[in-house]
Amino acid sequence: MTDDGSRSYPADRCPLCFGDNQCAIAAPSGAQSIAECETCWCKRIDIPKELLATLPAEARGRACICLGCCKAAMDQPAEGVTKTVDPGGRKAMQLEANGQTVLVSHTGAQILSWQTDSGNVLWTASSPEHIDGKPVRGGVPVVFPWFGDHKIDPSKPAHGFARSIEWQCSVRNASSATFSCVDTPATRKMWDYRFRAELTVTLGDTLQITMRVTNEDERDFTFEQALHTYFAAGDIHKASVHGLENVRFIEHAREPEGEWDTSMPIRFRAETDRVFQQAPDVMSLQATTLSRTVTLNTNNSRSTIVWNPWPNKTARLSQMQADDWQQFVCIETANVGENQVTLMPGASHEMTLTLTATTP
Image (cartoon, rainbow, N blue to C red; front, side):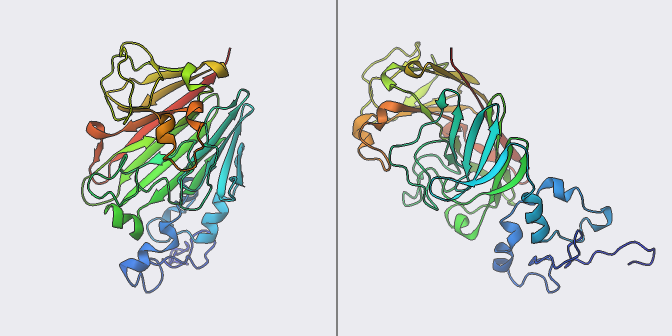
């Protein structure tokens, strides 16, 4: 107790349970080195904002919540959110609302499925690999901090490292979960900046995905990002993408269609890998054989990528069987190339994709 009768909060004790807070910085001797600080538990778990709000005013800025209290808060149930595992046994969260379910793996914060009355709106390759440190081909992989092959060092992983690392589930609300990751010594060997990335997945009448990136470094940094969404198309020959008519693009396919009318909706007759810039906020996929329309509403996304590998490229891709190309199309919500994002220290950027699936 202090002289005025109020409780004191030593830096090495949790202000909620008054137990050892186990934090490298707050321990009596403090962090012994930068390396020790970087491996501390609090660098790997995003303490829920709701828990921080319960701190007594006199403890704020003086004491740190302990790992036990943090985990207990994260284990609190939320309506429509359930801890589970994915088909490979990796940690995952399941969201439920309106008779729909969404499965999100902690590996890469990757949405693996979105089940509705009409089936899975998303698509997964025929030979998926649910392995630690590896994205599944399908669902919604998170691309960050670069898109495609690294521009300078091709030995670095394609599409960045975010889709392969473990994310923490930091906040759970009704039918909503927020996953987060921060820089580590391993990520800084590939991209030498301090950052925080968060992905909030909310299931209601729609499926909403918000990706937030914060610059926690002392320097500006520039990044690319994409929600590399694989949609079930039924029969790709009868599917079409609407809303990108007359939008400027570059075709990156090795064996593209010879000619097409850019004022018409996109139909698929050959390998397609088009990067559209200054893309509109609304577009749609007409999956005719599935009797389904998927509408994409985006915010702060200026790039869109439409991709189907066709048979020749499919033969070179992992987790794919020979006929898989006929069943899906990727429509990627992104900021790449000329629309890459630059953040000043302390600044954040949010990109949101809202998906609506309808059937007749």
